[in-house]
Image 1 (tube, rainbow, N blue to C red):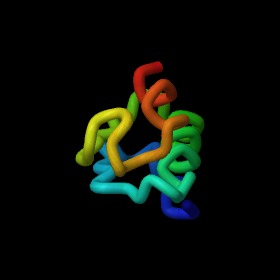
Image 2: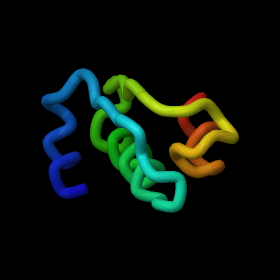
Image 3: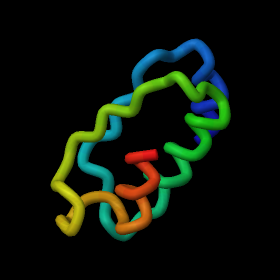
Image 4: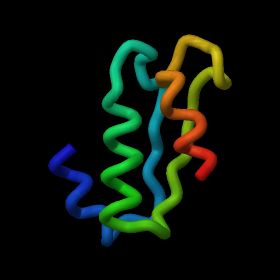
Length: 63
């Protein structure tokens, strides 16, 4: 998470196959948008309802 502080120097963040049971993906997305709202997150994983990223992640990703 502390590396996201450098996010203002980053244009794209890749989130690949995040675990379903870990809320870190939501925390990373929130922090990224706080530090650099124009940064794009590329999500690689199963679609909503699958076994990657939590239920909270997908609606937040679409904002």
